[in-house]
Image 1 (cartoon, one colour):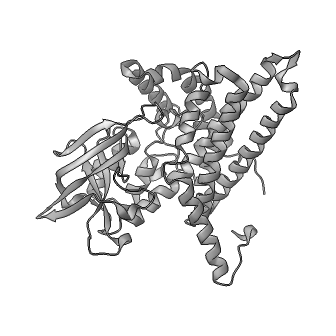
Image 2: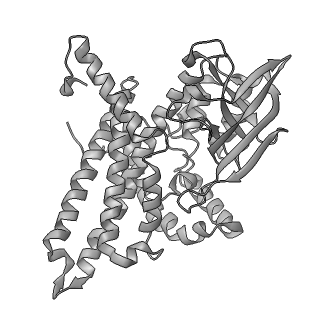
Image 3: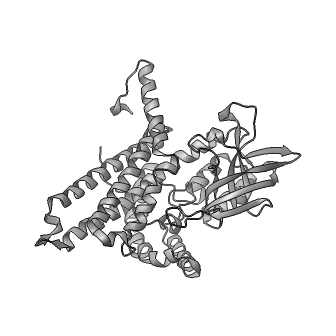
Length: 396
């Protein structure tokens, strides 16, 4: 068993790392500012990524992507994850939606949405969360769709529909089978964002950051019956297949964020002195280095294990639940220590840490709060013992 970056992956990983550190990270001040200058800078980065063969590396090869397996993609995605703009510049921000459409879309849906999605010509969005119910229990979703002749009529209220303000369409999870059991009561419907009745109420800032997290109302929104994604009543099945890989994609990118924060912290310890000696000579500062190094490596190995399980054909529900919690906590802790080392400067935009810190805190909530994943993993492990077995870590 080897934990090194595989020889076949090293060249593409090194190329992505160079692209991130030499082009994307230096462009962050312009990208943060938004407006026409930011859009032009991103267009230039995307064009360069395509020219250099770094575009859509995780997408299936038959869709025009790089076709990297999950395990190989960990090594690439952790380099890409160094900046929040990495997945935008390299065309992987659509990967969850591309994989979902690749498996469930009709030929017409593939032509209209999937192909331009992989090319980066359009932006997707996904609507599941609602402000009026606890989203940790999606069986409470109230947005409903009914068939009226050859059209679905959708009414409801969603929020945190990320990217809706620039998206070509939204995949909406809504109740279509009111008399069915809870996990068979929902379907996915593709709704173009220019459909009458689709109204963006606001873009909701998250800890002061504008991330195009939109609140949207659906008022008698009519779309063709053919806009149903997959089968009626299979919304939960499709959602789980989408969210599982999405959670591990987050964890991959968090490794890159943690590495960047770790680098900043360790360099700062050598650059600054206090009470007659470098901070690097202080035992408490070395504790920050030790704790961060161990947490990053533990999260990294858990991420690799989850990716390996997915590549082997497993749904990896336990592995993904574990790394989603451990990865989010790790990222928060590492960035927090780096800020502590920087002192007052760490609280300012003079370093990327204060912005990274706010993103890290949100990671413990989106795609399922820690508590839900902890409960689910504990329940699954205990069910093995309830059936008379035991949890063999070396055999998972």
